[in-house]
Length: 274
Image (cartoon, rainbow, N blue to C red):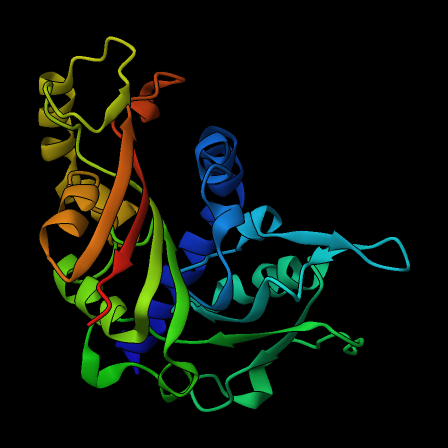
């Protein structure tokens, strides 16, 4: 009981901090996210969406009443797998603002805690909020499994917090249909100086800042709700196998001090056909 209460407080504190930090974060990374997010299509699963501000970069259309909503001809359904329930209010609000018909998975999240949802309109794309993670194949929520296989699975700054990145990626692969695509944008440890994926260097001392990331990770992961700033997520995606195509780029932003400890890798990986 005490452990659950403390964990709930931890979730609440992080979600409160994220109200401010997510805006600053989006301002820095949206230029890269919008290079790949418009390609997302079909039956979609997002791991750790937080407030899901990135929904605005999905394919949209202008409806008869002048609303600018997600295009049902491109996005067929959307499952948001988010472990922190204190994110749900803003997550739901962003989804509804983009024209989704939001519902909650009552098995993973009790009905007495569900936020009120708007009345659906014709052709609204279904959007289901599910509580859980992909940390363990045996614990993947039934609502996620029921909707599989997925055409598109995506993560934004989620692989830094999963228990084990390779396990999460294997579970992502298992949920993708053959030929389905995993889209990602993740902050990573400073890529090596000769890393050919780096397309924006900005003169950053990769060796020094990589060591800084290693030094601060033990404290940062406590402050940042499990966030490891020194994971090589792009490289991990490429190395696990099971893909027929892996295409990602890395950048070393220099907007501020935080940017130097949070370079980015972003791109996509297409699951092998068999």
